[in-house]
Amino acid sequence: MCLAGLGVLLAPARSAGRGRFPSPPRELCDLAVACLACGEVRPAVSELADEDLDALVGIVARLIGAYERMDFGSFLALRTGDLESVGERRAGDLEALRTVARDLRIPEADLATDWLGVLARFWAAYYERTPVAHFLPEETRIELHGEGLGVRSLESWEESFVALRDRVEGPWIQHALVVPHRRDIGRIASDAGPLRWIDLELGFETREGSRARVLARFVHDGALEEWYLHAAATVYTAGDRSERHLIL
Image (spheres, helix red, strand yellow):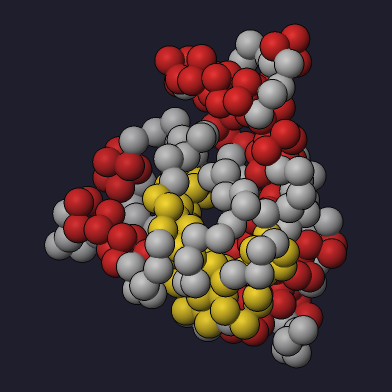
């Protein structure tokens, strides 16, 4: 792994464990560091503030834990601030999720009556094995933006993520996030200084041997002082041959 010159990043990310979840384990942080070291990061790692490095390492470590290790706790840790209210916000969709869970032959008695409880049971049944065989550190692309919207509209800003998704041809999935953020992006963009966001791309191999990449846009909610997942897509570069897709 390309760890040269990044020893300062080897400590577990401090900001990733805020709230109810501990920091990611050292092993996952080391894998995240490998992605930053071998991939393309803008601005350069050496130019980033410590808190931004912590955020990047924590986010990548959680993504690796969720999909290469099939760890539901890592999935939840990326959304910690939004977990308390998600049941109320997704109440109208609960029965649809329960129906999908039943399609996996989950016994009715095992289905909880709350959004996260059903999601946890669905996660365990859907992922009989990890959806990602392994991430490819050298295919990592990360851009940290702090310039705000400038003269752009929010619509144009949203379209810039679509442009990233379509940069490489292939079938794609634009994910409907199962735990959306509790605050509207319009408020976030206007109430706490210039908008800050991370555009992240991680390449991986599926269990079926095809190449794919997951793209995620994380936004900093300045009023709440937390990073949250705003948009995500999976793109398959050699046909959609994944047995199990990513849950985002």
